[in-house]
Image (cartoon, rainbow, N blue to C red):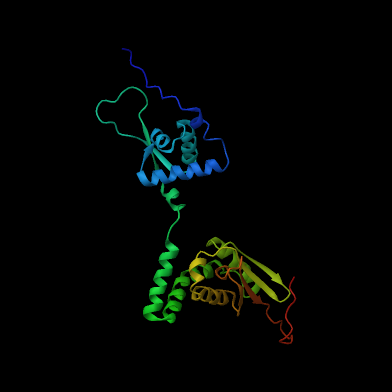
Length: 248
């Protein structure tokens, strides 16, 4: 008998048509592929197709896209015994980059740790922990602001750039009474909602870095959309203390 490559079984129309291009279905399918690879460690396109009830072509389309984005890697599956004709099967596994996109329980773990500290050593210990946590951030931002000068508003702009580089998506604006530092992202918002010491420690860092007292007007941890810090304008030389610079 003449050897020939195995022909895949025909896919029922309802399965073949179950993966329309684009849309929310694509997102759900990719999530299911990711979940299955996470559970099994590795799998071939055929195995994923069988497990998910989708066409092999549709699964390969998702895998090709995930390969291009660096979310999966592919390698030949070792054959046991004599290998038959045709292409060797390839297995797919999640990359470290893909695993970083998965949900984590870091917030819950951090909150539990701070509850333990508060219970055993009191709220003051939580404040000390918060200060220690932002010490590295303060050091890095101070280095990035080395050429910002002494003006608090100019330093606020430099601080916004430094915080953005740290992932805070920050910006600084000037208003009639001084300036505002706005942070559109807070990496510890969920934990800070329970432990305000984290916000307080960060506010002290901002004050030291801009070189003047500041006032927190809003925080993401408190349910606001943006963390907003007011920075008063410096008093001009010779001006009365109650008259501040009008900055547009």
